[in-house]
Image 1: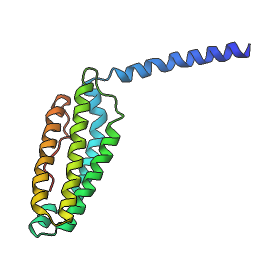
Image 2 (image 1 turned 180 degrees about the vertical axis):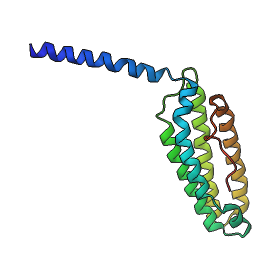
Image 3 (image 1 turned 60 degrees about the horizontal axis):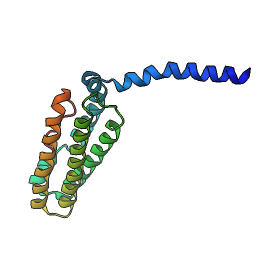
Image 4 (image 1 turned 30 degrees about the vertical axis):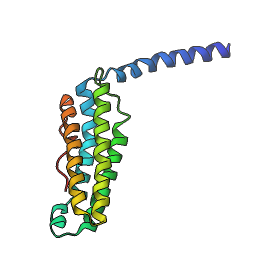
Length: 158
């Protein structure tokens, strides 16, 4: 009797959880945007704080400090990507979300290279790679237009 009751309880529990799992998979663009906007907003605020004064330091040729700022902001983007990856993409937009995250990873990697170049005093190389990072950010922004996100848009850094 105990075995049948346990099986019945497991089946009832599975039936109660199945609609919740299915509902998460049926996410729309609007619900996706609502879930990711707070994550992106926190990251945007942190990045603005990290990059405060970077332009001024570049003009003053304080490259060591600027390099550290770019490396820190790259780490911040890595955290953002880690937090966005588990959010289920909207139906029909799985490929777009994957491409969006790919461009974000590319921008993150390039920002790290910019930081390393500044720390080594190679400001010309840093300027070239920062243009590439900006292009990756623009590509990510072009994809994010489909989701109508505001806080997850890349701006000019540094």
